[in-house]
Image (cartoon, rainbow over all chains, first blue to last red; front, side, top):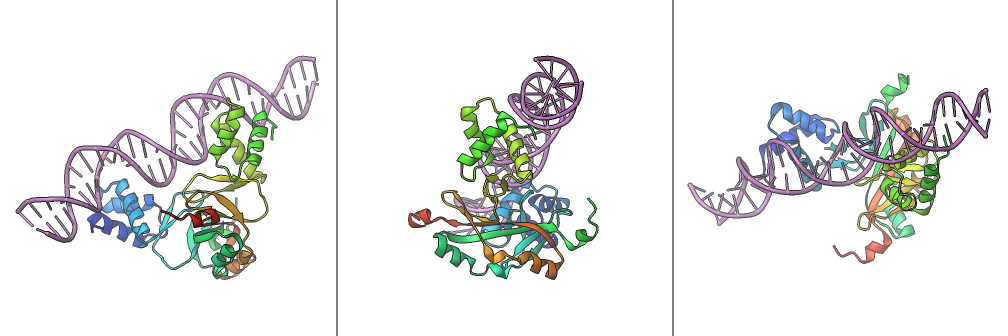
Length: 127
Length: 127
DNA sequence: TCCTAAATGAGAACTATTTGCAATTAATAT
DNA sequence: ATATTAATTGCAAATAGTTCTCATTTAGGA
C-alpha cells in the first residue's frame, strides 16, 4: 500500500476523532487539506479496515463508523445524543464454539450494538 | 390502523418468506397485486414493526430484513449464500444489568448478528 | 531518471429508504 | 345507506450513504 499524504491525513483524523463516520473523517481532513475527495476518504477507510488497522462498525440506523481500538469489544449507542462508546462483553467468550456444535454454523465474527440512554442522557430524560 | 388490502398482502408475504428484505416483500406482493407501490410496502413494514407485530433487523452490509418471530433471538448471516437464521443467545441474559451497574448506560435493546458460513456452505467451501 | 502499478479527484451512478402531494379509501358518525 | 374525514395509497422526486468510472497524478522500485 502506497504511503500517500491523503492516507496520513486520514489516519491523523481517525486518531483525533471518537468513532467517526466517514463523513466526519472527511470534514476533519477537508479543513486542512481542502482538495481531498470524499471518494478517497472512503477508499482509504475501506483499505485500512480490510487490512485490520481499524475496525469498520455498521451501526443500525446511521452511517458506518470507524474505530481505532482494535481489541475485541462492542458498542453502546445512545439513542438520544448519538454518542457511541466501547464496552466489552466477556459473556460471549466461547459462544462461537457452542453455536458451531449446536447448529453447524461456523462463525467468523459478530457484531453487537446496544442501544439505550447514556449516563448523561438518563438524567435529563425529557422527551 | 386501517385494514387495507395492501396491508393484508404484505402480512401474507411476510409469513411466506424467511427473513425477507423490503424488496423481497415487494416482489412477492407485486406478483399478485401489481399496482402496489414500493413506498407502500416500506410504510407498512415500518408501521407494523413500530407496533411490534414484526421485527425490523438491520443486517450489516445489506438491506434491512423483517422477521415474524417475535421472541428474543439473534441472527446468523452466512457470508457466502446470504441466508439469515435465528439463534438464541442465553449467554447475554442479564448483561443489561451488568452494564448499567458498570457504566450507567441504560440499555433499551441490543442487536447481535453473527457472520460466518452456514452448515451448507462450510462443506463446499471453495472460494 | 524512468517506469508502472497504485492512488487520486470529480462527479456520475447506485442502493436502500423516505418524503411530498394529490387522489383514494376504510371506518365512523349521521 | 350516505356523508365525513383522517388514514392510506401511488407516484415520482428527494435523500443518505457509499461505490464506481475514468482520466490524471504519484510513490517507490528498477
